[in-house]
Image 1 (tube, rainbow, N blue to C red):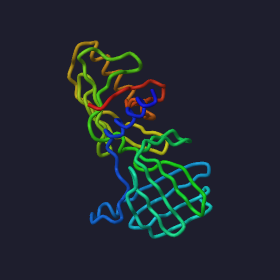
Image 2: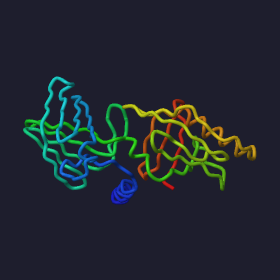
Image 3: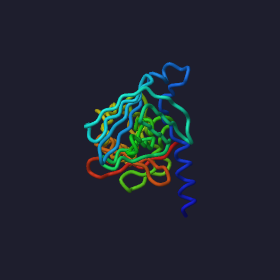
Image 4: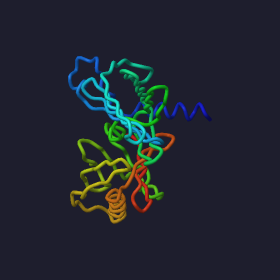
Length: 233
C-alpha cells in the first residue's frame, strides 16, 4: 500500500506545472531576476531570492539576513547558500501547517545550526497547465456524458460549465483563493444539464480554498463546504 501511494504521488507531481526557483547561474536573465519566496511557521520565517541575493526574515521578523548567494542543483531541487545561510528547495507538494495552503516545493532554511521548515514557490503553478475535468460536484457525481472543465491561466479561470462557456478572475492569498464575478454564455440546454451547470458555477463563485487528494485529484471547496473534484484532462 505504501509503495502504491508513493508511486501515485510521484505521478501526480510529474503532471504538475511548477515554477522552478530562479537559477542564479543561468544565462537566462528572466530566471536570474525572478523572485522566489519560501515561508514557514513555528517560528515564523520567510526567504526571498532575487537578483543573486537571498533575504531571510527569521524568528517572526526579529532577525534579518541579506546575503549574496551561490546556486547549485540538488536532488529534485536547488540549494542556495551565502554566508552562514543555506536554503534547500525540493520540488515536492507542501502544505503550510498554519494556513493549509498548498505550495509546489518543500523549503528548508539553515542558519547558524538552526533549521527552519516550510514551503516555497507559487501556489498558482499547481493549477496551471492542462485543463481539469470535473468528475464530481458536491458528492453527487455528474451527469453521464456531460462535461465541466477548469483551466487556470493569467489570473483567470475558464472552461465549460456543462452547457455554456465561462470565465472569471482569480485572487490567491496566503490562505486560499477566491473567484471574481463569473461571465458565461447563455445557451439553453436540457433542464438537468442547466441545473448541474448552475450548481457548478455556484460552488465556483463561492470558492475559498483548494487541496489535492492522495491520488492527485484537485479539490476546490467553497465557503459552505461543498466541493468540486476534478482531474487533469
